[in-house]
Image 1 (tube, one colour):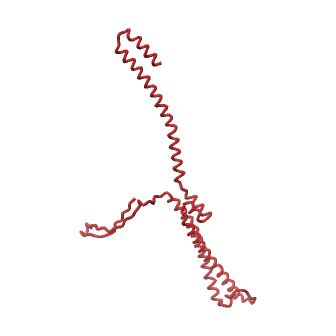
Image 2 (tube, helix red, strand yellow):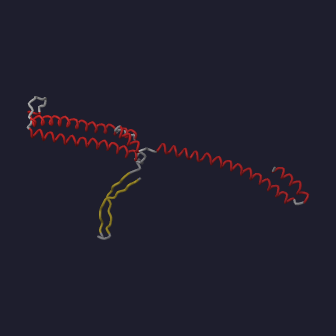
Image 3 (cartoon, helix red, strand yellow):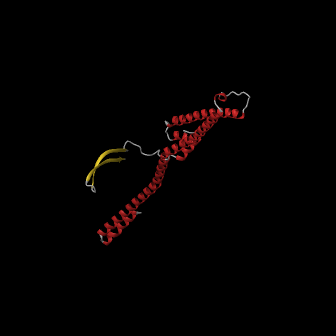
Length: 219
């Protein structure tokens, strides 16, 4: 259409004798056609970029979220279901033996206190009730009734403390997993440093120098 329009203008305008006007109008039409073509190309490019760019940005954001998000809730649930599992989720595998060593120690001490408490309780009840039927408990003849009562109370108290310590250690295992999950992406690179050095400052009120310590935190 643009070529036909240019030819028509070329044929009509020489008859009028305005050659300069003909050239200007012909070139104006030519540039107008070129501008429309370039405009169509630009619109097509912008539409294509507008479709692809949001998709790429959304994909990049979703990938970043999936990669960096570390759920403290998951870590807490894992450690609540099975102690040490939350630490494995946080990739703190070195803590798992410590956790089970702690639970093993608490179980061993609690079991020993339980056995002693039962023996002292059985012997105390036997002596207090003045039973005559022989039982397999050496504490009956080894300790007096007062000593048996003190021993029973002592091991019962230790047993209760063992239960409290075991529950506290179980809760600590969950808290540790949650805290590690919160700090999973925290920057702990070598660029973090704390320098402590002696400094000397001038006290304007006392008009003298005072010494102290300066703390420099670099990150």
